[in-house]
Image (cartoon, rainbow, N blue to C red; front, side, top):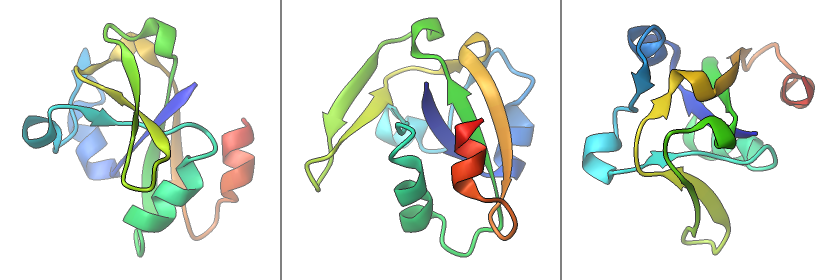
Length: 109
């Protein structure tokens, strides 16, 4: 499973659509994803001060596009896709309350 993090208000606009595109897709041309091990670091780096997030658990084999692992500035490889996340590939949807939830327990589900 791979993961995509999205703000709740933005997800609310897309949750009933067949295909999901993040706000940055037109500018960047791909969707940022993370492995299970990468999720805590991504939240720490990019979502400081955010209280609630939606974490989408995605089954790569069900995506209508290919997952590509590409290196970032640190050299670590992150999964990206160059197309939408189709609804059928989303297997889990977690609403994370970062003040209350133990992220390790949520990710273990």
